[in-house]
Amino acid sequence: MEQIQTRCVVVGGGPAGMMLGFLLARAGVEVMVLEKHADFFRDFRGDTIHPSTLELMHQLGLLEEFLRQPHQETRELRGTINGHTVPIADFSKLPTHCKFIAFMPQWDFLNFLSGHARKFPEFHLCMQYEVTDLLTASGRVTGVRANTPQGEVEVRADLVIGADGRHATTRLRAHFEVQEFGVPIDVLWMRISKRKPDPAQSLGFFDRGKLLVLLDRRDYWQCGVVIPKGDLEEIKARGLPAFQDYIATMATFLRDRVTELDDWSKIKLLTVQINRLREWCREGLLCIGDAAHAMSPAGGVGINLAIQDAVATANLLAEKLRQGPVSLEDLRAVQKRREWPTRLIQRMQVFIHRRIATGKASSGKTKLPFVVWLLKTFPVLRQLPARFIGIGPRPERVRSPAKEN
Image (cartoon, rainbow, N blue to C red; front, side, top):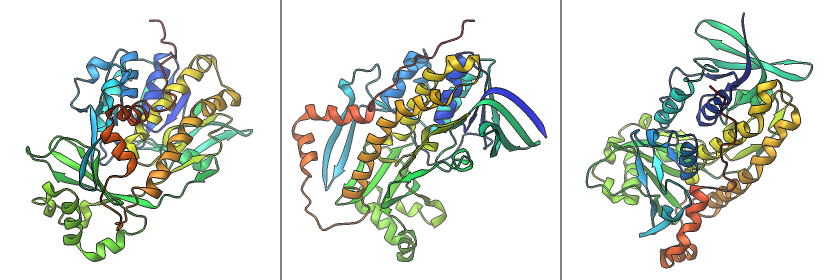
């Protein structure tokens, strides 16, 4: 079996893994990022790049080039709630260079970041490397075993970073305890064509518990329909025409094209989870992003929270890792730094899914909820959700060193 030695191996080439790989290589740390797929093209992945992430791009000197990539900009989130169109969040007053959310397909974001990371000789991106197990010695994680097109390999490292998502092999093989927070919803994702007269990007359509989210992909809408958890088979039993009508009732401008959903194979189920690890690390291993805390799609905060994890990890570990192995206390410092904002956002998401966006039609009143009425009546209040969504609690700044050329 081929054996490879590196300073740090990052499992997973998603937003957290790629950002961390970039920052570590930038700091002069030899790093390998292992991605199990052959490319980054995966549909129905989050693509909301929030002002907090755009601010990081500015700090890294990449913002101008980043904004030349195809994207849409949203300076205000609006939602249609019980038949009323209401502004929810106004990003125009945020203390950031970019006062908007950028909607960019995740594969474009990852290709951009990996392209810049490759400029550092310390960075190595290995595609089609599927990690199957952890390597350990005397209770310490010392690397990973992976399947590749050339056969099985062992990658040994001073530090393994688990950034391989909510179904992470790293956290499974490490036997970490997972705390689950029951979420009563799932999401059905699909594509519907977009036409010129369609309204601009909005937060979505909410009607007494029912929720339809639309993400602008330039030539089509990525649609998300919130359903009660476990109800997919019952929805299928009612038939496609009933499901098509459900969407058209929520967003009437789509009625002339919902028939594009003419087969259930075009509708994908996302099982929504909210959970987090009790301990994010053990000797030689640290989990970040969805591997440490699976988030709901609510607010589109998952990508940006994962990227904040990556920045904090580089800030706290890069300089030490450049010299050699880091201690368990060093790894625990990352969890201590990032656990509080994670807990706060997850509590908010659980509240939303249990009390507001349940996927079930209720017989409640069609008037606006009081909080939404406040946002509509007093525009200054829209800065509060804008800050929570756009910047989030405890935003990170890039403080990891940049190696001298």
